[in-house]
Amino acid sequence: MDPSIIWVALGLVLLILEMTTGTFTLIFISIGCFAAGLLSIISNMNFNYTAQIITCSVISVLGVLLLRKPLQERMLRSISIKSDIGKEIVIDHNLHPHSTARVTYQGSTWQAINLDPEEIKKGDRVCIVGMDGNTLLIRKVF
Image 1 (cartoon, helix red, strand yellow):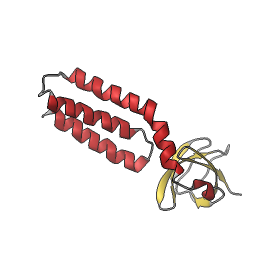
Image 2 (tube, rainbow, N blue to C red):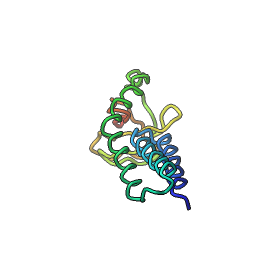
Image 3 (spheres, one colour):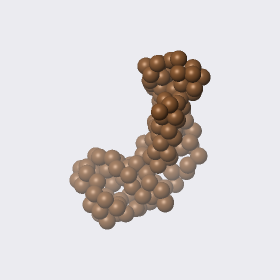
Image 4 (cartoon, rainbow, N blue to C red):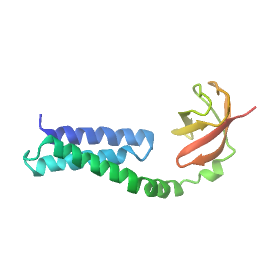
């Protein structure tokens, strides 16, 4: 199979996964895959796989290190999450102490961290007490 097709397909899969996670990491790996696929097309397969892998790796790492935080801050600035602090939500699965999981809030899924020293059980009510980037900081409501 043509390596450019593999790179583009991998890039598309990662792009779709990024849309479901919202981590602002997979998008840069996806861009790296697209760049490696473009290199494969332009070079007419004269570059070996090592050069394609290095291209993907360098672009992915540089994107995550240099662009992730500014992009994340810019995107989150448009979300008025501060007004959501203090809101209560119901957890749809168990969440261990100080662990991270996906929770449903306002019709979409968010990364959330349980700040409590005890497990939050499915069906428990929690309160949003803050934000860390695009992660909700939650505590159990008693």
